[in-house]
Image (cartoon, rainbow, N blue to C red; front, side, top):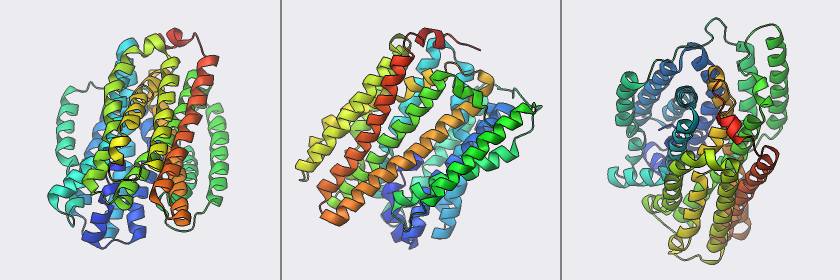
Length: 455
């Protein structure tokens, strides 16, 4: 639900504009406000899960997300919809790090790889299938009110998950309840992440002046955060992020790969959705269906990747990233030179190739990233990884959207502009490929030792 709501809203924006009379700025914040609050909540929520218990925080975040989804659907004005989306993003940020932390705590060895494989499938499928689900709901419920069902669809899923979670998830007590939350660290980190994400989000939505100076402010705040965390730990207290995690090379390499890969693959859905709807006149449903090959490829390969990561290690991630890069580059070329209404059929193969590659990247990368992370720090480690992915997503969408819209303003041709945006995404995935290849060379031979770590 939390990741589906990142992409499902994109195709519902015209419906919101018609149903609520929302302005372009308000529509921008419906999308970007969710992403911003999601990213800000991750690290403190991960730490609270470590301290108070992951099952408790999971159920709290899930209940909050379900209730706020109902409020989003009931919103009677664009302003209230923006407010509820901010709260929904915060609830998603509370819920999400508990999932990875519980996988890290409850599974070992090959079973952990399999669990991360299914988690990878959820990420890939939910991100890619969001536009299709949104298109179906708008088609069934009507254009002016169909956007409400984009949020109502969370209710049955949330209620079922609450019932099953309360009954079936094992109790996961906190491991460090004697420590107080590092409030200063949380504030510095939150301000730093917010300052970095805001200009990226503005670029993503093309909503006006982009305050790029905030990137410098954000970098300074994060430097202050690192200094504070080091001094806080020297006093014998527990910081919100244990920076010693980054000394584990598998974790540092995995976070870097996660950042660069999410920067690459998330931008393609914005470019393709806009291109198919505005450039080729597709309906919201048809535009969403055009990205389905990526979702299917990711679902097919994710479970397999989780099962065999112990055998192939980082070589699998390198191969998967190469497959995604080639698939996106081929998609960009075909769109550039095949601009008629059946272009969706032409790019089916390359998108499927990219999806198959994606499925053997996300899950195996998380398995290897957490191989040396103690279970007591799993929540914080998961939050840092996911925060890097959220910032990477904002950066990647900003790059792809900037290339797409600036080219469109200059050339006025949708195929050339969409091709350029997709090439930008392919280039960012290529950066992830280089990082993974270097990590494979440097850390070769350590896979079995890392996956055998159970502390």
